[in-house]
Every structure is written in structure tokens, then in C-alpha cells.
Image 1 (tube, rainbow, N blue to C red):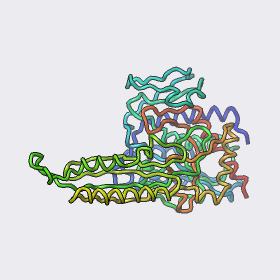
Image 2: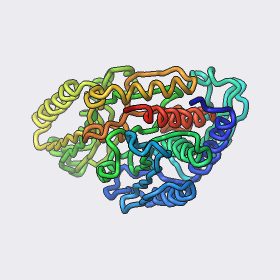
Image 3: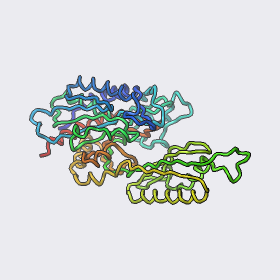
Image 4: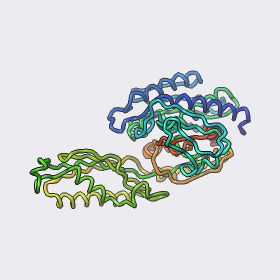
Length: 420
């Protein structure tokens, strides 16, 4: 199969229209939330998607109590017994930057000049921020107005999957086997996938989530989170000598001893890091969160061992101080599961090549729902959406990426019909 010019134009128009609508719906997750979803607004987008899936003739559509949206695309005639696959994207956006009242801006025929933002005159986007922009000259680029993120992570993935569904509905000659669609809550917090209904997903899935055009990711960080509580003793500062144990001050000193060279801003490629994400408190008590990342779990255990030794040293150094540290294993490097079934990777590579893109393969310095799914036997590598500088107010995406990701999905579905 070769996707015609007509279908390509349809994919571009449909994906851009959907994306521009979806990003306006606030679905920011809450890092401090405990329920799933952590924010009720994630239901709002889910409800819209349910109605659109119905209009596209998908079946068995469910919007459950946790915010998951499931749907089944019946196979093309004659392909009922082909290997089923799943397509996933997440509903929530990153909690660290506002996702409320997003106003997308379409910069047509990008000419290489500095992109400016109407809501923040000091914010600028150019090649220094995003070198790939130099490759996108002449393309249409979408940004926010600069006071919010854009939401490509992962509303681009949702739009691309929905556009593929629209194409299958409009063009019956596009062949495919059984396909399950799943939109998940709270990927950004790492909580949502724990409530996935495993029985509704096939054993082979793909997340559509992040990355430049052509990227295929099947290796990710091994991920841990450390939570800290420093218990001190507050005394009136006029009478505090040799008595006060200033928890917040000691915590600042403690975290200054994490190796600066092993922080996100000083690492790249396969280098791991510590990342202090939160620190708050008072002289009486302070709390903090640190995420710990590496592609090799052994290196993460070395980092946790260092933290424990630092804890012991500080409790000796400051008599009466108590430090509680709890470690949580958030997800594993998915390569240990995916390398057992190379076909899943090979067909994804072929689909990207069929779309006319170069296949870009490297470890993702992050994680996806696919890491957790792969660990429970649902093998799930990640395909690109085309979004860049996500999680920031400089987030952007070329409209061509929305089209190309949808193309890759269509090619991938057809390739799976050829497997016996």
C-alpha cells in the first residue's frame, strides 16, 4: 500500500483540526493527587473522544471510572484472524507548567526568523532552543501564546490516533486487523496506568507519545522516586544556640551534596541523574522529592546507596535530626522485555520508512506508559508524535508531524495484516 496524495491531505487537515481543538481542553494532572485521575478535567476530554469514536463507528467503547477510554476497531473484511494491536496516548498534560486556557498559534510557512510569543514578550524560540527548526523551514509550526505549554504531550498523539481512525472510516481500502484504542489518564504522574484493564489490551501495543518525526523508542530509563522527611526542632532564634535543629536549612545543605555533574542540566545520552523536584518546609520539618534515573538499574542502586549513607552521616552530624527516606520503583527499562520480540520493532521501523521518514532510534530520556505495560507482558514501544520542547512554554510542533505520525499508524496496521 502507498498512501495517496488525497489521503495525505486528509490526514493533515484532520489531524491539525483535532489537535487545535484538543489542546484548548485543560487536562493538567496533579502531582500531589492520589485519586485516578488526579484531575476531573481529564474526564472532559475523554467524554469528547467517546462521542467522536462513536461517530467513526468504533465498537465496545468504554469510559471507565478512572478516566480510561477504550474502543475497538473491527478488522477489515478477511483480516479478522490477524494479530491484534493496540494504540495508546495519554489524556493528561504536564503539571509543572500551566495548561489552562491554551491558545494555539499557527505560524505559517516558517521562514527561519525568531518566533515570538504574544503573552510573553521576553520569550523567544529559535534555532538555539530547537535546532530542528532549521530543518522545518517552509513548514507550518504550532506554538502556544507563551503563557502556557502547548500540550503536544500528548494531545498530538491523541489527534494522530483519532485521525487514523477517521481515515480507516473514510477510506475502506486501508486494510487493518483488529485494533484497540486506549486513551490513558495520569501518564505524567505515573499513576494512571496502574488502573489499566489489562484484559482489554492486546499483547502488542504502541504508545504514540513525544519525540521528533521518525523516532522509535524501545529503551527508556529505569526510574525511581525518593521522598524525604527531615524532622528538626524549632526554637526561638534568640535562644537557639546549640538547641535548634533547622530542618529546612539542613535539607538545603543535604541536597547540595548530590553530585552536580549528575543533574539533568549536566547529563545527556545514556547518562543518569538525580533531580530534586520539590523542597519545602520550616525549621521544624521539611519534605522533598528526588527522582533518580539511569538506563542501568545497578547505577540507580548506587545512587540510592549514596543517599542512604548521606542520611546516616547527617543524622550523626546533627544530633537529634531524623531523616526518613522512602524509595519507590516507578518503572523499568522496557528494552529487557521488548528485545525478546524483534518483530514489534522491525514493523515499526518499516512503517516509518514507508512514510518517507528516516528511522531515528535512541534511548528515550524519560518514560512512557509502555514501560509499565511491557513489564506486565503487554509489549509496548513508543512512536513519535513530532512535538518538541514539550513540558515548556516553548513547546512546538510542525503540522507535517501530525500528518506523518498518522501515516505511520496506517502503514503499521497494514504491515501487521501481512504477519502470519
